[in-house]
Image 1: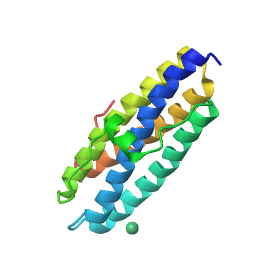
Image 2: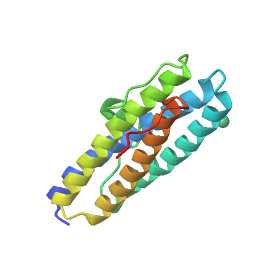
Image 3: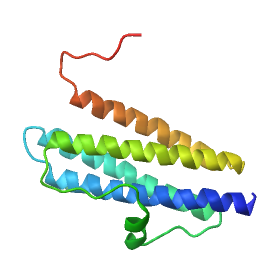
Length: 158
Ligand SMILES: [Fe+2]
């Protein structure tokens, strides 16, 4: 593959790696600190989500290595590069869901950016990886949106 074009992809993959790190730690934060009537549901759901984010952190870093580049590997790098910001801990569960949905927007934007740049470099492997992540994150976002809705609310009819 064209090294110049791969360099561009890797630069954005490193941003994605940082984003996923911050997202992962935020999910742990929320897993530990969620309070109230929804504790049992959300405590488990946040664990499920951070387990998935942990796998993706590893896959992204190893994709960078597969492209023969070095992934950013220190927390200080992630804090500097990430577009996702840290959150407070003592916040309402509904606020946690709102923050996570906003973070999903940031992640989806970065996933699409990586995919577009990888396309210019003819990097099918990265495009395929991003496609799967986008699909899964869109589904998780729908579920969190459903959680926010009232029991008698419905989605838009076609
Ligand atoms: Fe736990």
